[in-house]
Length: 440
Image (tube, rainbow, N blue to C red; front, side, top):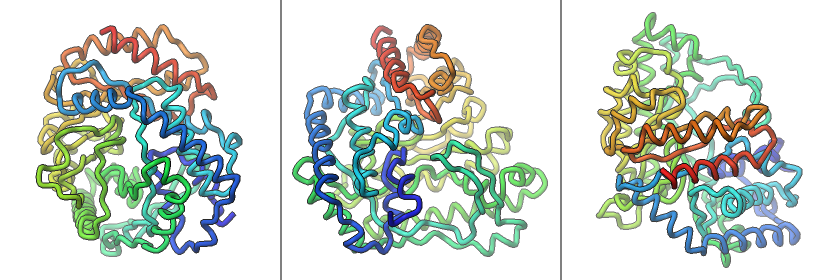
């Protein structure tokens, strides 16, 4: 194969194919030559996705998410993304395609088929096939040296971070968008020729997941050093966060100016949930996507152990200028936000708030009410433990839904590094969650 990590790319479990786009800089037409057998497999799967997308229930689910995101009263909405568990539901050995790009596309299509035929949650199957831009990896000029992290992120990583002192910040530069337009068009043409009569082929790239920036700080400075810096070297933290803020603002400008953004109102947004809404894009939208037509998202999981005062001083002020640019915003992931709420509530047009398993759910229910989406994140350990206790899972969900019955609730199962090699766990969890939501 052309790329040493081609099998990891083919079985990537993220919600887009950005790794594929990153891997194809400078690719020639010969490297995109998919054989007849692979084409037949992909077309059969694409046909299944198209049939699933045409079902009336998909329109019903789309409407459910729209009402939910627009803060209208609905039953709790259920979404299960197994994340790394996908490699146990659809293991590499089960893929039939041979070409590494075809294997990546096969994985994408098989996930949609599983969601549409077996999962049973409120995920919406769309008759689209997204292709990422081919582009050079975005970077800050300095990069940590990583050791470990094999097996799709399920093994530990340690890193040697490049910023040793405040003077090293001068060695950083803003990320520069570099798109290989020819390779991008060849990839789009390939998908169009293969699947275009079955699914709508779209050019859509997720250029970032979070604009929180504290993961970047952790990589550039080191997590231990970052924690000490809040007390011993606050000037370094402020200067680094300011640089990352300005660099991300410049990146957003580049993406807007080069017309590289896509609407994110029909797929995964933030740290969970789908983005369907009648409030985006803006009324003056004319086809060219701007950040104000999109959902924004930030979090700060790496700083969970710092005080609310430190968060309000060192983190949120640098995130606010970025979030100000977006039409609606999501905030938070695994970090508990009940103690940070007084700062977080300042975020403009905040709509979706992550309530992790480590937060005080009763307190968050009081704080959010029906004014925000309560994005409930049950324990992923329930799907990973040696035993799968359906009774306890049901009891926990029932209690949580009672506590939040006056809120606008979505129940999001994610962050699964393993499902104990038992695909039935995700389908049973979704079924239990759906039953409890419908019987509330």
